[in-house]
Length: 146
Image 1 (cartoon, rainbow, N blue to C red):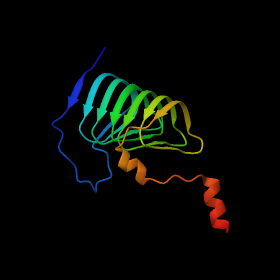
Image 2 (cartoon, rainbow, N blue to C red):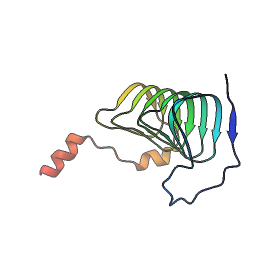
Image 3 (cartoon, rainbow, N blue to C red):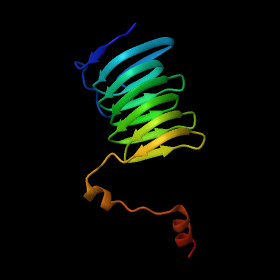
């Protein structure tokens, strides 16, 4: 069974509220389709298809997502497989397992996190890229020791 739902008339929440606007929970729940989420979402079930998230996607430890995803930020504690495009930050937590391609300018993989795939820059403006300085960890340690 395929399920398609568009969430566009969802009221905005106060930015100070850290609670995600929408949570999909249920170890036996399986959703398949094309989803458009206006704000943040936490997933603790199986979701497949396509997801467009207007804010932050959190895949909980029991979440299994097999989908192509467009989002601002993503935090992965569970399993993800597919193509992920994030305009903000992507974090693979220690319990996270990711297989697929990620397009972002900020990727953090915690110790214990798993990633198998390709990473590409999201293509931020050249001026924004030039403003960032990149240091190798060993170079920073050497300069601190002096």
